[in-house]
Length: 486
Image (cartoon, rainbow, N blue to C red; front, side, top):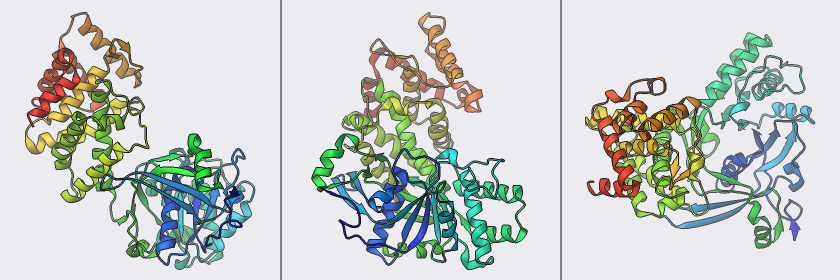
């Protein structure tokens, strides 16, 4: 078999218009994949120079394959049909190891063609290290490296407005663009950079906050040899991902023109405010995950996909999402419903084995951020407790009893929660307290909820009724009865 490279495969090269911090699976199956499609379907003509932002040699550079690699995109499309799309990505021109070729990295700042910077240096990457210096080759922190590059560009182009760039971080932190800009300005102060540079930085450049959404399952280790034989070429950089993708960018209007989005059907949205989209994702996708876990797991189900093959849990999630979560959100109803249907298809994806116990990690914090805001809004607007959410809370309390079929559950949460659940369930098992007092103890943990949830009219009563029934009849029977009433 031939090696995948540009000698053996006649793939287009594009003008380097994009710099990207990070060579990991996510960016290659998300950003670089989208740029490749835009190159093919529009006049974008944008090549990518990837910067390897940390100093390690454990993995070879993409340069050994001339930047080429394969994406395998698999899952269910909007119609619920199984799809598997394979693409050789040719949007990457080179990968630059910044610790070995700092000069080449800095030379990119002198390119008038380069207009966009993407990054994913992990959540820990957007950090401030006070020991970093402007003269380091390179500085250690990613924002410091970026400041070095931007300062060189400012000087090379004499501070022209046209030399500004659009910076689009993809790190999974809230308002990542604003956070990155904040730290870059800290370096400006630390290094005593000129007021003119700070003015150019602020007025000629755009730091865009983003919402990125795609499950990237990474290198297909178990299928690698089989896939190479199927493709009839060698590729050590192939990457797999789900079919769904969404890229919401809080950025300037001209970015859509810069990326030629008017000519594309990609799910890239340029908005003035990403917050409604963040709320939609957290409430619908993450909220449904969090509500599903204890109920499905305590019904002897171990994975998300397995739960979605069970009509009971499919019906439960549909009722939760469409009847209780969507009414609390601010985007147009048709957009919310379309996103919800995408979410359910993603949960059904046969190519992804998402274990419920993995999602259960630190789940009390997840209940607070993903479900509680919607519960409070629902109660406020409907003047009643949402049944499916109350069932999820009852299931969560039962889950923290720490037993399934007389086998111990390996619970993972904060020490404070584990201690409280142990105390409450021990009291219940010893008949010191009843179910009502057990529920009151959980809902009354104001150190976590930042309020006493027992004060929500009807919540304690509903959760207690559901929990009593689950202890006697099992979760599946209680869900079945509850859904019959819908």
